Length: 200
Image (cartoon, one colour):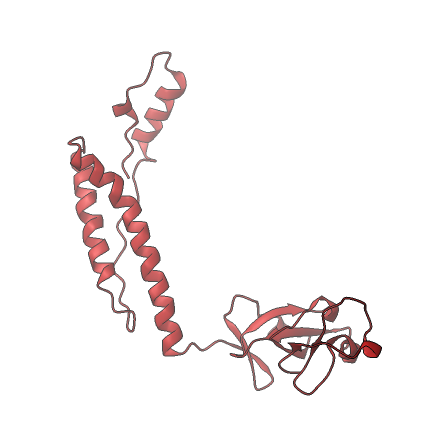
């Protein structure tokens, strides 16, 4: 049953007052055709790109506006699908999604944007420490590494991405961080802000 869209039935044909109604491209009312489905099968909805958007055994739990509906045997092979947008319903079968070059490019653009935001979140406080003249040698080195990484990410061609290696994470959780945490918890005197400096 394909391409369900909203419609307004004739007053004499309505089953529920003030309810929304859908019909398929071949004229089947959604409420009316639910009785055609078996109780022991999987029911899925999928969009115009054949991407699976919902999976259930209870057909009454579906509302396929702008979607198509299919019924499948409840098998291990069909249950492997999920609604992560990585599965499609093609030629009557559940298959892993094959992305088009344009879809892959958009995914790469999104990843690039997130990586640049992540890098900027690290660079900003480090750059501020350098500007104020209070950066440690390690903070200065980390700033250089992250700025270089940010430039390399910005240069990535999203039509054929080759991602640079992400710099190592903060080492603050090592022994030094532990000692500072103990000092904060046990000291009766104020702790200097320099003692709490976190290496980002």
